[in-house]
Length: 85
Image 1 (cartoon, rainbow, N blue to C red):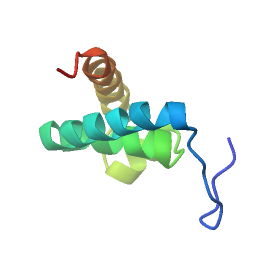
Image 2 (cartoon, rainbow, N blue to C red):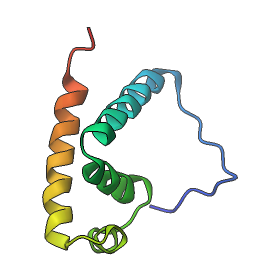
Image 3 (cartoon, helix red, strand yellow):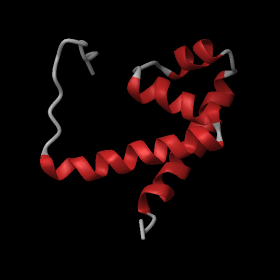
Image 4 (cartoon, rainbow, N blue to C red):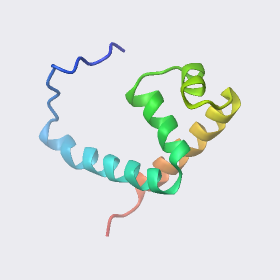
């Protein structure tokens, strides 16, 4: 995936606005609960770093990145399936 240039505009279709907001809110909750897991997700999915690059950037082992990424993705999946009411 090519990096997004800062001068490009990303359009979110109307039907994707609510899921995008829900994802953002869930990521904010994760950051409050576990900063490392949050930062690993950010590095992998928003910065596009490899597992190895993420480990180096966060000064943790590759095994830690793999373990915490699995846990963060599992937490996020459960959180996004929750009934908002």
